[in-house]
Length: 421
Image 1 (cartoon, rainbow, N blue to C red):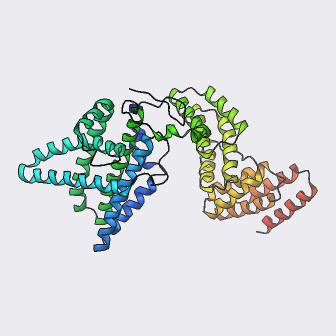
Image 2: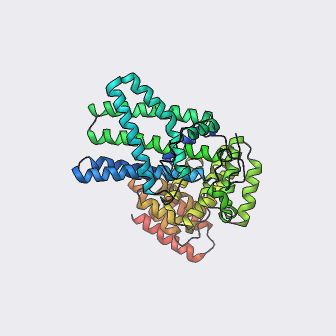
Image 3: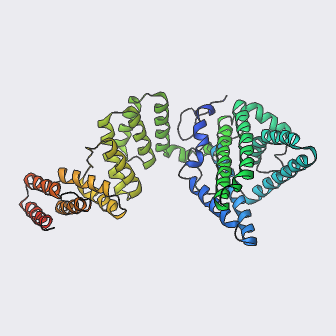
């Protein structure tokens, strides 16, 4: 095995056998899952539109394979994150590839018709063995016809070894399962549901195997005489400090060795603002380590960053998770957290809204909106059938804590408003 340095991490990439879970769950990534959903919906809709539906079905198939090729190419070139656009693979290459697959399908059904199921199973097994090699060579060569080269298939299989054999075996099992499911699921499920299930499984196998193949190419690129494009992009490589840091965190998590990595992250955090992906990975590291104080401190910083960048869905998810493991959690400042209170109210997250209101009232008595928080907390409590006494008690505590007479007058007005309600 040739263990190469990843251009974005400056660390040895993990061996393929340590990434099996990542391969299988690749379509669940946030960048890939919407494509699975959209392609599935298009497939279901195409079944109801006759000629137009046929056009949609063909376009859906072409798009699915084009995206799979993009995934394969992108990761073979050494990049960690999924591709953000479909620009490097031409539609003509995909048409060539699909034509070859069509010929293979005709051969399979001909053998099945004339020689029976056993012979057809042997043919399917052979096709499953050579398909990953043919697919990888199609992307490497940039031509689906040039990739029809058995000596090159054998060389590639020999270089990739067990990683290739396991992938081919799983593809064989996956295709058998997909065929069996397509033959049976329509008999007891509504057609749209059955079509969606079969399509999702097919796309899952397609995208997972594409990532697996791309990873194998990159891991063994020297033996394959393949030069990843990422190695030529020194500017991006030098600038992508978050990518380097994320790789270091992954290594620390895998080795369960946290302290050096945390020290490094704290040092870099003093120099610059970490990106959202790096902060998320850092939180994962801290949760693995389990130090409550460090988790709380990082959650405060991360939440403030998300709110400042107006990333409300991520901010809300982080706040819910943090309050779940740390009921005493307090945001970094009240003014910024007020935007999350309003967002929680807007989307109906009354549980989160209540927790935020209580902690903000307890910890930020001098904010201009403290009185508004108390009034809103009273409303939330009354709506849930509880007494507004907690809101009044928190408001009284805030009045006692504040040193501003002007603020105290605001809180008195808010208390009167709650009492009236």
